[in-house]
Amino acid sequence: MGKRATLLDPPALDESKAPIENVLDLTPVVDLGPDVFTNTRPLWHPPGARGIYGGAAIAQSLSAAMRTVPADFAVHSMHCYFVLAGDSEIPILYHVERVRDGRSFITRTVQARQRGRPIFTTTLSFSRVGSGGEKTVDHAVPMPEVPLPKDLVPGTVEALSNAGGGPFESRKAGIVNRTAPNPGDKRVRRFVRARGHISQEGGFQAHLSTLAYVTDSHFIGTIARVHDLPRFSSPRELQTMLQALKNPSDLDDEDITKALRELKEEEAAALRRKLQGALDDATQSQKDRKELGMMVSLDHSIYFHNPRAFRADEWMLIEMESPWAGEGRGLAIQKIWSQDGTLIATCTQEGVVRLKQDKSPKSKI
Image (tube, rainbow, N blue to C red; front, side, top):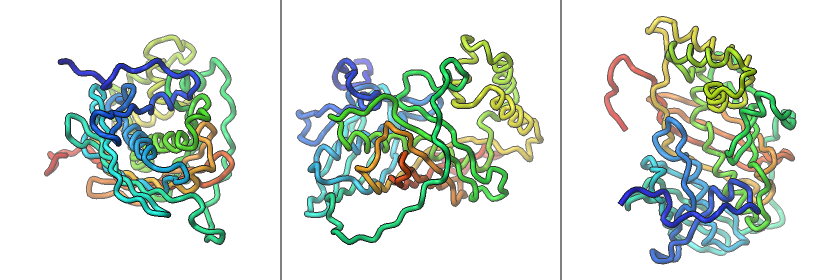
């Protein structure tokens, strides 16, 4: 029997919901148990990635766990491990284990499996809303003073690069301390929001799942950004990309459209400057050049600070930094604020970050 991406035939898209709600929809598998769920629709496999987008496993695991928890509890922490690359052509089964049900805290574990093998595992903790009492200790890192994005002008390069059927709209918000000699001093910022309007039916749980989904986007890539590792290290590949951008007004050209989609939110002139600089780096001596060889997420943690105080279909500001990299790994930290400036989440992620070597590495994943 051939592969199929879902256990059951996917239903028609629910137009009353935001695109991300349809992406993350789950179907109970009652034949396997009361707390087993599967992806309702096929999952995204990013171009060049080893498997499905990790944010989908994170978000659907959270969604599955929330279905086993009373509505007056909200997730406050989630600790995840990526075990194997997920296959987008095979259904995923999410098995929820009810580890503990207390008066103030509830614990769940979720294991995502394909062909009986775990590909992803997470432990989640939920707290009862208001269980901290009337008197609490409160503080939060303030949101940086970054102006909210303006609506895009239809037909412009930036509007076209943000177009398409993706569930999110994203805009870069700059790099703080871009020229700092220490990569740990740099901060990468961007705005993101879900397209459409998250339904009232989805409730705060839909906003939390949406937030969890986006936390894996560009996260481990922060290490490459703060080290200024070029995405395209081959001179021939860069020349091809530059040639495709010589006439940015010809936006119907297949190659230019592809380039703009792959390198979102960059104006054509900025793209040319960036790629030309990378091309200059790529033509340096082999001894001095650093080329990104492999980048894979290992673990991922999310601390949800204000689970009912934001909307994921409004602009959220994300700031990412990397305090450390070494031994073929890197650590990234991410803070996320809601549109009104509320700190809603802090995340950490460690991953494999390997450069191309003159000699073969001692081990492989």
